[in-house]
Image (tube, rainbow, N blue to C red; front, side):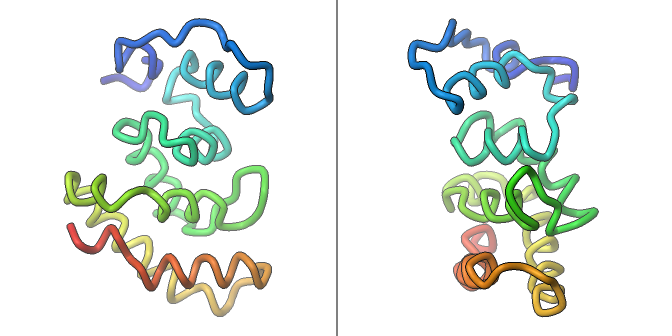
Length: 138
């Protein structure tokens, strides 16, 4: 799998043109045709949040999170971390090496959370996810 490939090419599945005219549907369809090496933090946030291409995109998301656990997409500091932490436990159980990276990111995030200027809602949500730690069962 190369970073110049799209999710359509990697997964060998063309979804065709969007059949519903909403921002999210149009965006998801466009992202399936974008080389994964060109994905922004926001692209990763949207795709992983929609459970799309997780197998291929999680390592890219972790690359960003390892540099800054609270990197932001278009919404708020930590928005990528939040969607990554919400991925089903079954993914982490099936991908122990990736889960190991996530454990390191989560540990760093937990240590930094008190010193960050994030909203109360973000703080509460991230703390809950850090306490649940589905990735640590791997």
